[in-house]
Image (cartoon, rainbow, N blue to C red; front, side, top):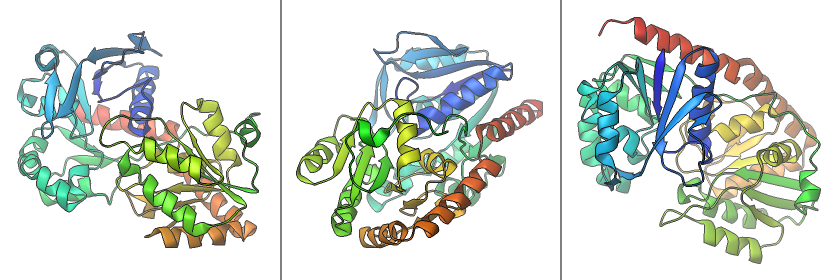
Length: 372
């Protein structure tokens, strides 16, 4: 098959969605398919092929609601003139998908949408802002040949069910157990962490990642034997919390805000932490929680995405509840170990990339074999 994956960002831009798309793209290439990724231009990307996957870049920004800028015509013409067997739009509410919606009938090949959560439906203000977008969306969804959700219970699938979208599969995210194995890097020593316990958060500095919740929790926790480590890259603009996080790291004891951390160091952090915390306001299927669980690291998270379906962690509704749960885990090593092992067992049985990629290929083949 000739497959096109569209994604707002792609490697070397780092993030959960980027990693998922990279895994799918490279996984399909290894299975013998010809794969191209259409994505945003990055000046630091000095290659147009990565691990067998062709990358096509466009200088475009925004979405249908916030406005679209850049070489819109170039991308639209690229889609219209393409000869792919399968065109996969990864995530709604970004330019790579939004520019495709109005020309779906003119794009050759079968079309698949990965909604990835519909963040525009997750708050009252967002629903007002995106009201017209989601009013029109059901008609667009019915033009896709297939929908792939990451969670059985999240808002994007609920929206599809409500509007009669029944051509779908649920395929979760995955993790590579080999990549996550313990390595020789002493993360604590390298980054100066000297406390007995380490709480880890891995997320870039977007406000929706809930770092303000995280700092509030850490103040409530008020333990001198615990370090809080946030690994995430700086983002620009109104939606960034980077500057406030850096200020907090200067004024709060045992808080480490780390950026541009090599991947092998991040893996070491997962293996050497005591508790993983996720404080996001919006997630569909957080890859970082799978990575934590894969090494037996228990997690405590806000109630987002499908995390109620995962073993190995605790859901916390407030900073106070999260602090209390962390106290309980840190003060009970056997409970902490058992919870981590429970999560690891589930991940190794159900959420490895080897398993997930086979599910993707099976769906792609099924879609290709269907009559239009």
